[in-house]
Image (cartoon, rainbow, N blue to C red; front, side, top):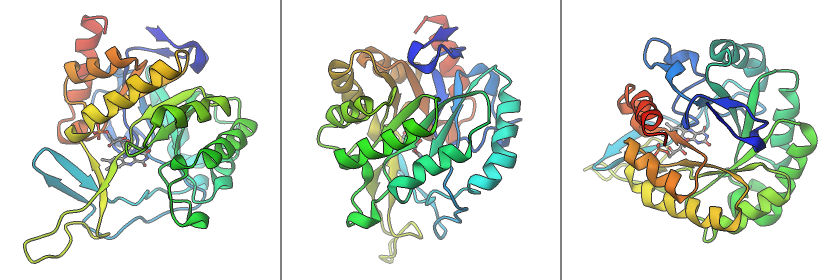
Length: 289
Ligand SMILES: Cc1cc2nc3c(=O)[nH]c(=O)nc-3n(C[C@H](O)[C@H](O)[C@H](O)COP(=O)(O)O)c2cc1C
């Protein structure tokens, strides 16, 4: 068991999590993946209102990675509070930790979602997806604006005692300085990294994704995420860091751990091969990684 003081000593069986958006609310994976072999699962995002997401196709593969434009589809706070999260927490039953991913389309929405989830016991952390566009400020993502990061984290801090993890984009010029802003505002730490923007076309010139563009995930993210983790660990020796992006093997996971991550999360590779995350977890347990 691994305990992390800044996550209120929640016991993690090992350092491997499933990344947000690739594991639903965990129960969808029963019968598909051995969830109990993992350290934790980060839920699909939760927004204030239900979101249908983007037009199909929502995923496209390319040599070496994938793109998605799911568009943060989720059932919304009321449903998630009444159904999906209670089921996820019951399924976890303390065997794996539950982290809840939260999105907002205004700065206030993050704290409103978190306040709305008050009373659900057993959440190890809220992960704030700060890669959402700040529509009031020309659509630049919240995570690229230090003032927005500070405001969102402070509002969420006031709304809950549960630890907060700020999830940042891989396209920030200086992720460590944004991470420092988040920690200064009350976050326990950061998740590094989210997807980065990209697009590809069909032979007829039409876009491969219904939304015209999407987020790139998988192996191209590995060295980018590892560098972001290393820089952030140097800047913030005591922050919790979750390394995510492009992990396909125990050795990839160790890249993040050597760079200073406390936990790692696997997304795309688990979608393609559900046995992979438990295998990475077992291999790390065996090597005490
Ligand atoms: C289909 C899909 C949906 C995702 N949805 C979310 C989401 O709702 N919130 C979030 O913070 N990240 C989301 N992500 C990003 C992943 O959690 C992760 O940061 C990213 O995919 C990099 O990890 P990977 O290379 O192992 O997939 C999503 C990724 C994919 C592929």
